[in-house]
Image 1 (spheres, rainbow, N blue to C red):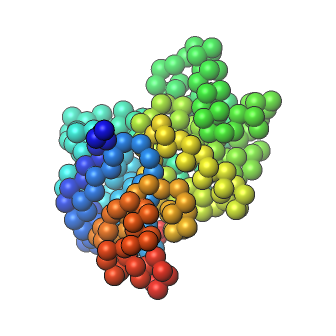
Image 2 (cartoon, rainbow, N blue to C red):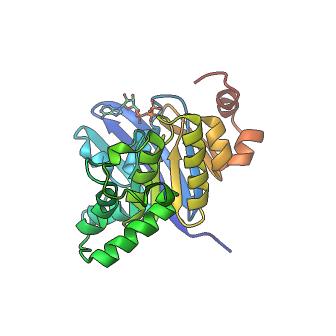
Length: 253
Ligand SMILES: Nc1ncnc2c1ncn2[C@@H]1O[C@H](COP(=O)(O)OP(=O)(O)OP(=O)(O)O)[C@@H](O)[C@H]1O
């Protein structure tokens, strides 16, 4: 069965002022599974990711040109509802960034903003989201405690639960494990794999072993260009471009 296209990106160029950061990227991202974005520091991975739900709009000097279609719709068209786009295309950041609120209120935040007020409905969404983020058992007895009372790994899973609570289609993750210890990293990686049967996940990672462990497809960026984009297994066993081979074998980066 042919997979549905979630993102079709054509000739994407992004610059900050006069600095060109993404230079003509073409990528198609299919439904579900994990796509990893790898490449050396400063090659434009985060910039690319932020353009997919228009978080890049928050940077005044950023200029985006070219086409990004999400489920066939140009996300940069004037008629597009950005709040709705960000509901469908959620984001999890490098450092866990829970709100200074209780565990419950962190997860209920998004649904409340989108108009859900009924306590029973909210309770159910919070429970399902925390279960989805593999955190429920650890927090179910202390839902009213501050999110800051959780460990870093738990806080990151709480941020994933918060993203799940608005029922997204896609999750963008920008180095979600880089602030976590190895045990917490393993838990988040397992969670990402599990979530990838229901969500389309796009993850930026510095860590090539992580990309190899959890992703189905990998895109290698270098100086703002997509050098290679293929099945992860092919990329790591039989890279087509010498620059990819040099990067994944640790010759630079
Ligand atoms: N808000 C910004 N304003 C101006 N320039 C920026 C901004 N964010 C990033 N840049 C520049 O854009 C380039 C690409 O940055 P980006 O963060 O997208 O790369 P990256 O591959 O994600 O890097 P890293 O792996 O180090 O996080 C860098 O030269 C960076 O200095």
